[in-house]
Image (cartoon, rainbow, N blue to C red; front, top):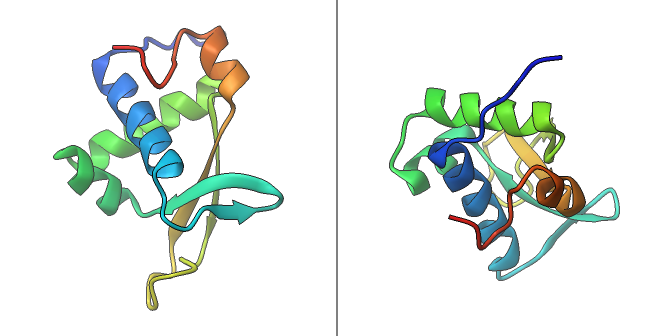
Length: 103
C-alpha cells in the first residue's frame, strides 16, 4: 500500500475545491452529484501555484479516495474541451483528517 502524506498544499487544494463547490452561484450537478468543473490552470491560478503542483495534489487526493475526477468538456466556457469534474467524498475526507475547516 502506498503511504500518502497530507501536507499543507494538499489541504489548500482540498479546501479550494470545497470552497468552489460550496460558493458556486450555479451549483453544478453531474451524474446526480454536486461537483465543480475546472481546468488545472484555473485551480493553479486560484491557488497562485503551478499546474504541475495542482496535478500532483489532485493525484494525492484521488489516491486517498477523497475526490473522484471525470474529464469532459466545460459546460459553461466555450472552447475548453478538457476540464475536470471533481466530486468530493466528505466521509472519506473526514476519515483521513481533511475537513473544509481544517488548517
